[in-house]
Amino acid sequence: MTQPRQFVIEADGGSRGNPGPAGYGAVVIDPVTGETLAEAAEYIGVATNNVAEYKGLIAGLKAAKALVPDASADGALQVRVRMDSKLVVEQMSGRWKIKHPDMKPLAAEAARILPAAAVTYEWIPREKNKHADRLANEAMDAGKRGKQWEPSSSTAALDIPRPSTTAGLPPVSGPPGDAAAGAARARAALSSRPGAATGTAPAVAPTPTASPTAPQVGWAAAPDLGAPATFVLLRHGETALTPEKRFSGSGGSDPELSATGRHQAERIAQSLAARGTIEEVVSSPLRRCRETAAVVAARLGLEVRIEDGLRETDFGAWEGLTFAEVRERYGPDLDAWLASAKAAPTGGGESFAEVARRVAATRDRLTARYAGRTVLLVTHVTPIKTLVRLALGAPPEAMFRMELSAASVSAVAYYSDGNVSLRLLNDTSHLR
Image (cartoon, rainbow, N blue to C red; front, side, top):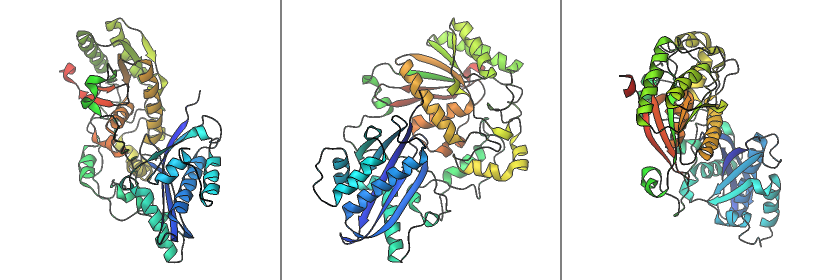
């Protein structure tokens, strides 16, 4: 069964006078990557705050629907709407009656856009709705000038500072998949701050809810939640491409382990056997992972289960090339890829955003399947970094700030209430 697409919509509206000059703003966010997928804003003339808020909701729902061709089909889309309008949230949730004649047709229009089962509503405080609020204010400012809001002039996403361009950053010496490949870029990115708007909004992470009953996160909640599903994340051993720092994904050749890689697999097998905690072994379908997993599983007396969602990124035309070769041949495409998680490698490769959605869906399946168990996942750089990034709630550019060596071990624990705890990252002590 196809997994539904999931979006977060944040919407707002305002009126300067109530009633007075009014406008709305809405943003559609990918809850996995934190990326802004669509923005909408409009000056609507003289109206009340509540009318503008409903207009923002309608615009957000329509924008989400436009991103999924079969959005009206049952189970194709799941949307979580977050607004600081208690009135809209409670009325659309069915807890408050809609009495005002101006609200009834707007609520009915919003309800018709997507199936009722596909949409949930959540109230958030105003300070957590800055992106949509600024869009609404930009729309009202444009209306004051006698114009309509234009995406190219928006600075709404800058409320959450994120590096949005590679300008001025030092070059990376190798693919971000290899250890230390993005170190120079990472140091610069950590201290960078966005300047003026560039016309393409930087990625914006979903805003946490303000619910007083929200569970604690990480270790603070762990003692009372029972045994988590623990994923021990093993990057495969070296291949001939690894020491040369060549892009090696799922779209090119399928290299085998080198002699060094096989030795690394034996060392990690010995180490994991001594710990005695692994209960299952799951592997990417690619050969280098299957070979690594087979060595470990044989030592542990376990079978290997193949999981396609753990495969590496498809690097398209960059497969087998060094970072310098990609820079020389596909410079503009490489710059775009480094600047945005939505940009894909040349020749039909996968973007980091696409990989994140795939990996998150795989994570959800595996945590449900292995609740309370410790499982070895033998996979690749991008899936491991993605799992770590998502566990920490870090932005997409965090991918360039992690070092992950061949045959290294990381670990993430997933608790039954949704809490996540990063327990280990890039451990190579078993290789020394």
